Length: 201
Image 1 (cartoon, rainbow, N blue to C red):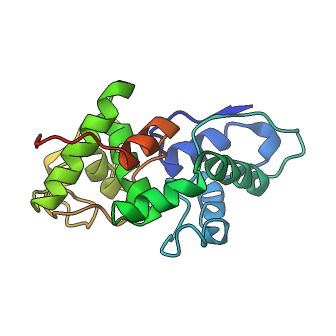
Image 2 (image 1 turned 45 degrees about the horizontal axis):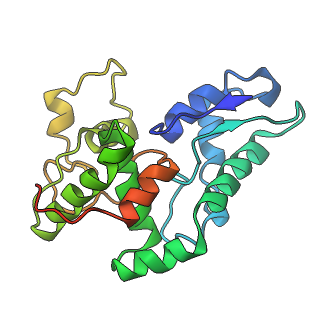
């Protein structure tokens, strides 16, 4: 059994996977490599460079002879089970791609603590995007540091993180980051598709 909490990144998932002896993984890098199999989501997200955002947070129970690749397929399959076909249509109405919705949902996941706050957080994100105001989301800054192997894993955001020249640094660059920064749960995906109408920034 493996539990993936909402808001985890692929690095967090890789760390958890190597703790499962039955998966016979030698390193986190080995697990991360399997998360680059974008063929699993290419129809949903042709721009995907890895499976970030599509490894659905849930508790997975699997047979002892399950391979790490099969477990990752299970996570993507669970995402596909949650992502309803009409959600693709809803994204289109919002003039967003599936990737943009999943990216927005990943930010909502890392920013909102309560389910009923999520549609409000969604409206703040969309209002900022519309006005070209940087989102300034810490989770995207942490993600940029993790991408470069510079994150210190002590829960603190340092000046070097804030000043990092990365397209994931939403303090420096306006707009959505290039892709998801975590695994969003169903309520965050739903909020990204159904924001409240507000003028909150």
